[in-house]
Length: 262
Image (cartoon, rainbow, N blue to C red):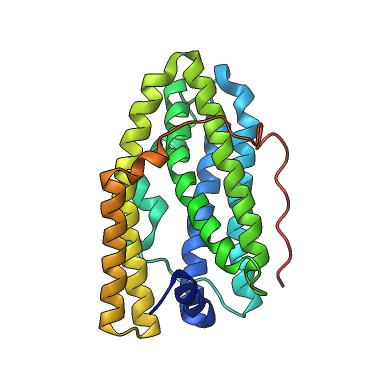
């Protein structure tokens, strides 16, 4: 029988699977850093007070990317090409979730609706990230090789989620509540499909690297599809609720520097 802990341990113990895991994570974090940096630069004048927090969000994502690269260097590994079907952030953008990259590449100010869309998209994806990092922290927070990185990233993701809740509630109080709920629902329903497909693709690649028996791979795929079924039937609603967080002004200061892993 296998568990989340035993599966991740297998991935960490094998250089090729660990390299793929870190490469996928680093790529996604780097894209998130770029997106937030562009949004901060293009934020409308009426919302300029939000720009430092968006910049901090991007700086955190960049830091996470550097952490995953450092974890690879520590083991003497170099990044590998990320298979398209495992690129969660790119697939979200391709399916119209969040702000399109062609819009972010222009030097034209974004609109208030664009910022609401960005925050709603972040509310959904940061919930996913926070859930994943909480699970990894529970099982591997004390791991000698990856524990320190996991704990730091988990803390940051909780800050990002708190920031999204607080800013969306502020905007809802300013009269944007219906728009926010509409975008949250659209993002969440699309995200659970993409997350299912990416999870299946990642496990397929890991299975081939680690030479898992067909029965094990089939059982994992069944579990992923069962989780999707749960989310489709109502689990997605955890991604669209809004509540004032205990951590207020979670992104109100500068980003912490990445620790050394060399």
